[in-house]
Image 1 (cartoon, one colour):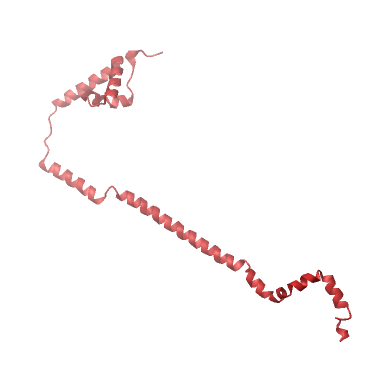
Image 2 (cartoon, rainbow, N blue to C red):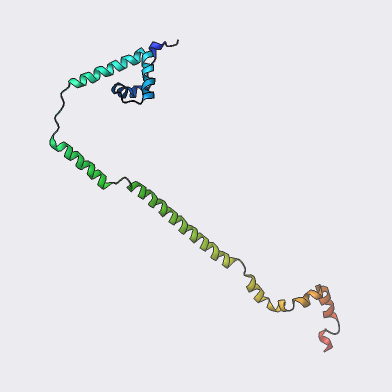
Length: 167
């Protein structure tokens, strides 16, 4: 069951623009599109007529009198709101929070790096300290390398020249 052109309904956006259309406040392109839709839609035309009648009835209502202090109180309240919470306060708070987090993360990273460095110093062997302990062996390293293996040293120890009994 398809709807004919007389049954077209206005979208919520078009319905929201009806008051501005009636007052002639819509931009040219939007106003033209809405006028085209209204020429094709009987329900849309009824909505426009009901809005016009509503505005006419509102015009017949008495206009209430406003006290002279009303505008002064309103402006004072607005001024108080502006002075107590400026609009840039949220931006400063956001950036201050970000900087505080950045500093905290930097501090934690520095502490972690320092702990890692000192743990590495205490656990990892120092090659120069080991060389200082083995200095006597390093002084005769060339001679040990010429010997080749321990077999030669064992043969030397068993020989008559180096035996303890030959003295």
